[in-house]
Length: 150
Image (tube, rainbow, N blue to C red; front, side, top):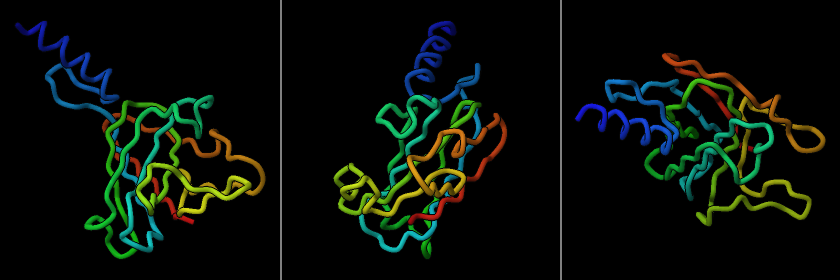
């Protein structure tokens, strides 16, 4: 019976994007995303996690987490916790104020809703680069990304 449980745990870990140890407990790196400058309780905070340069800022993210802001905002901050396999990642977050699941942007593609990137990256010209937003997480550690929404 144990091989069946181990196989199920392996399949679940691949499907969910989480690492699972042999004893069935989750193993991985803890990522704490601290979104600041969240000015209202409207909508949801969406966090997209990317692990490939070619997928950066596309709909091909590694994983995504959505948190209702109302009840989770302390002053102007919302904290989101994720468990990830060891590796290199970059984040894109935004406050979906109208809860439509899409980042509203203007005619030149700049966000109309509060948004931010890992490493608190603020690109000056052109789209942000994955390498500038990337950071590494290691199993057994807690990595914090403090991102100010603009």
